[in-house]
Length: 301
Image (cartoon, rainbow, N blue to C red; front, side, top):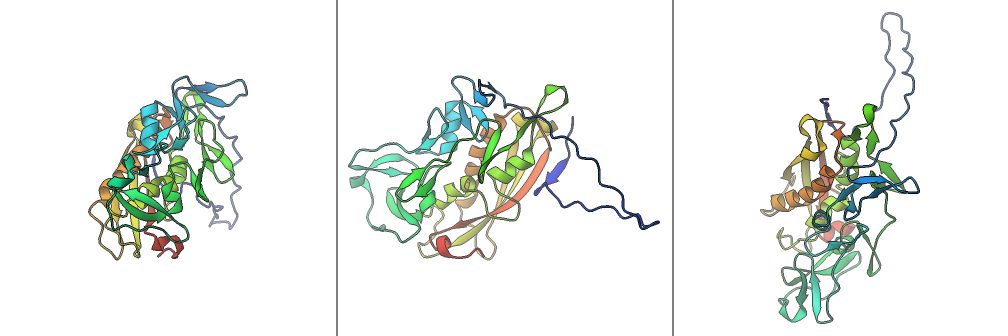
C-alpha cells in the first residue's frame, strides 16, 4: 500500500467546514478507535504483556537490533549493554576518555586546552586535546548529566519511544495484522519537532566536536538541519535519509555536513530495525542544533 508524503508536524488543528450555502456547520467525524499496539520486528510479548527483544538483540530507539547497530547508536567511544543503555569504557587512572577514540593516555594529550570549564559545561577530550562542551554532550546518547554522573532514564519497551514522562507508541497493528510504523511520530521524537530545536540524540554528536567544527570556545553557532526521510513503497527496512546543513548568518563549517550525516545515519539504522510499513513514504523536518559553550546560557537566535 503506497503512503502519502507528509511534512512535520503531522498533527494539525482541524476546523469544522462551513457550508457556504446555508451557513451551517458539518458535524465532526465520529471518533475512531486507535489501532492496537504491536511489537517491532524481532520482538514478542513477554509474560507481562510488554514487548521484549528476542535473545541476542538489543533494544534501541524502540527497535530490537544486533549489538553492532546498538554500538553505532551509542557512538564511537561508547558501547551498548544488553539492556540498550549506552556507557563509556572504564579507563585506567592514567587514561582519559576521548569521545571519538575511547581511552587514551593522559600523557599523550596535547597541551593548550582548558583545565576547567564554567557552569553548565564539562571538560572532555577531542582529538587528544581538552575541550569544554555542554555537560549533557559529555554523556553518551540516551543519558543526561546529573552532577558528575551520566544518568539513564527509565527504559521504554520495544515499539515505543521515551518522551517526557511517557512511552509513546510508534508501532501499531494494522488490518490483517501487519505492522505499521508511525514515521512522523518517530521523526518528531528522535529528530525533533519541525521548526524547533533538534533532539539531544541528534545534536549531541555535533556539540561534542567543537574542534572539528572549528568553533572558538567563546563563540556559538546555530546549525539548521533539514532532514528528509524516504521510505520507498512504505518499506521501513528501506528508509534512507538526506541531510542538508545551513547556518543562517554564518558560514557552514566544512566538517558540519559529514558530522550531521553520521549522526542521522546512526539513528536511521535502528529505525530500519522496526520493520513493517511506514505511515508515510516521506517525512521532512528542519531542526536547529545550538553549538558552542556560549549556547549553553545564550538564548536561541
